[in-house]
Length: 156
Image (cartoon, rainbow, N blue to C red; front, top):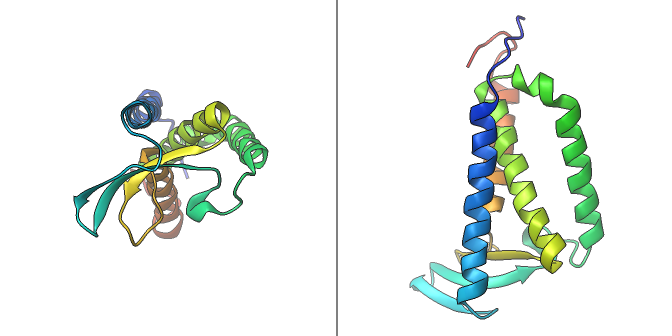
């Protein structure tokens, strides 16, 4: 397999775009709404609900702030160690990593600043989440797709 290196500039743009969008939305929510505010957009289907989640997805491991900060540090170290390898991978892996990294940084900023993550998308049948969470989930999904369905010698 020829390991072609790709420009990582668009990947870094993806990281920063997700991070800026996530933090701008959270700042807007935090400055505009009182904690606990829930505004129905589509009654009983989709609400805009401002909460601060001290745990991970589904509120697991609540109030384990330092554990999550440690996980982020490990993620960042892994990204630094594998940076050159990631730059030679398919677009699915490169952009999946960018979304995962950008989302992780967005939620880390909240944990460092507030001790919890600001969430606001509320579909009523799913835990409340945010833009960083979307980036993390889509990024992991993209990397899983690459691992499961792209052959070793397949280009973008």
